[in-house]
Image 1 (cartoon, rainbow, N blue to C red):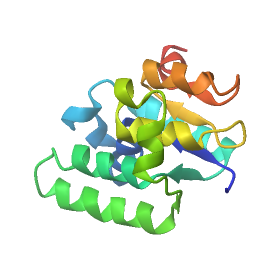
Image 2 (image 1 turned 180 degrees about the vertical axis):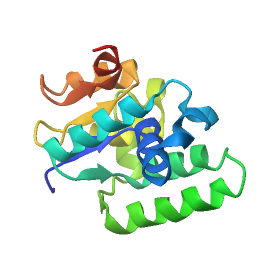
Image 3 (image 1 turned 45 degrees about the horizontal axis):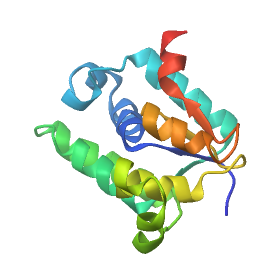
Length: 152
């Protein structure tokens, strides 16, 4: 598996939207909890930890969240998403394996797939406290609570 860091779908949406146009962060309904400064912190974290790693599940969820914005920005968001997909390191987790993860019933398929692949070499950056705590069960340095970083 490549080294780098996984990011959850919400942060992936922030990454795509902020890359397209930082002003969109305050306009996209799925990003109301984030600021331009949060985008900058996320970009810095990814630079420190290596490339952003993705699962197909995370990409699908991020795509669905990005689609909740109207055109013409929606089309531009998908163009940026396409570039991220082309440049990303995608790690495939079979759905059957994710469904067997102990957290599947609580967190769902996308998060269970992430839990299958996070390690200390490929930690998860997330705003979801339940996902964060589940990832920490794999080891002390397997997850970063981005919500904590927002408060700093």
